[in-house]
Image (cartoon, rainbow, N blue to C red; front, side):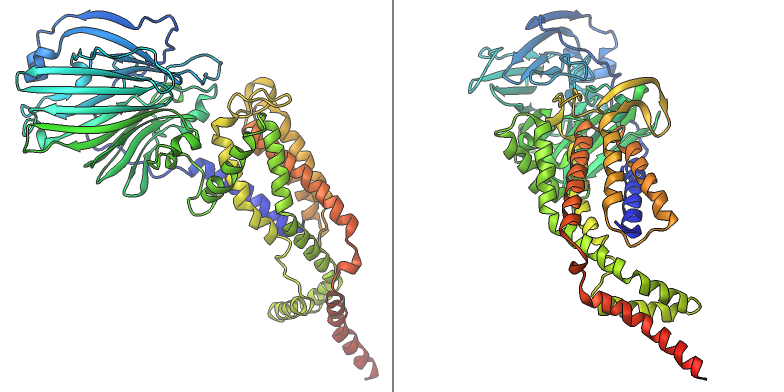
Length: 592
């Protein structure tokens, strides 16, 4: 690895560090009143929770002022119903016909405990929002529905189905019907809205279906999770998202058009609303709370026809893991919310190479640590021709070094002539000065794609290998109790071993340079890798460690099977020819 290669890789690593801090899109500060929200809270639902609970709320004297024609349904009794399938345990409330709790049965939080994904547990997450003709802002979570479904099963499995229906009787001619349809083996929930008597009864003939409050954080590292939390929408084939990165500031994004979905997410899970019909647009909102928690709202803007007495809309809700293969089956482009880097470069590698190979290997290998090692070996075998080409290019450059030094000395006062002579030498010798660095650069899109996949892959979560108990977090063996700038608050083993292999690889790789800068970089670059990877997931550190180990073994093999005979004679001839003019000139001078 010559100086250009080392410098290039060092710059790439530095760019990655800086880029991770500034990769978020431009945030738009709020310029209008925020939609109704509520304070977030995190609560784990008890397994002993009853499937139906009743609580009473006294009518408010100012209901008419606050709710207008909806005052009659602004007080009542809240009834809770829990529906459980193979993957989910969901608590529904008659107050708002909303979702108050979602517990994923196949996943635990960072402390290996069940968790409720709904952060706004007090009011619930799902609701309709609109402004009545008398100017009242109505959130259906403030209104009391009645459950009218009698066929609902509270526990279903496999191909069984369950239906829960709620109705809000506002008057004899005006009502809202909400229907949930569950299947026994899916994270997907069908959700229907029927508005009767609302034509020309709400401002702008439009309502919003919203998920409010974002999602509960599930990981131990809240700061890292906040970097992955956001609200997003898919509209016109483009991803729209907001990231509430600043404290005490509201971020908003509103766009008109036909949307494919809106969603909120944390690091490994998402809640998405997918419409079956045409939408009028999307609205996203985010606020950064204390302890790095970011609260988000995502809503679809839906029209209510001015003609006709009934308006019906059908949706799909997905509340579950950000598993690529799972969300891909929804056929709604929801996988676009997963961050795989540049759409034009690293994302194709992630979607069409890395994830399919991982899925295929997981069919017969259950341990993801072993899968990572095998994958690193496969990548090394595929890139072997590039490595061989790089080594041969280094040897060519090494053969030319004496001639190049003579030229540099001869034309040190004539840079233009020096560049011309260097170009001639490279052409005659068949040498590309970037030949050693180019093969490495060609591998970078794949290596970057691996970085994104391993950083966000839920498959690695809670899967251990060797001393690493969880491949989705650093393989810490000792916590300091305090944080060291850049390095972190712990000691991870994989990054240390990776730094050692980087150093060894540099020592055994042929180089055309042997100056002091190269000697310094031989120590600086491994140190940079150690600092950079200490706080990254253990799965990522394991991959790069094994990739480096295979690289060292491959380099030993190349070094032992190549010799001076592998250097084209043209390179040696060019080296001799470069020195010839200088000697001839010296001879003619002596005759005089």
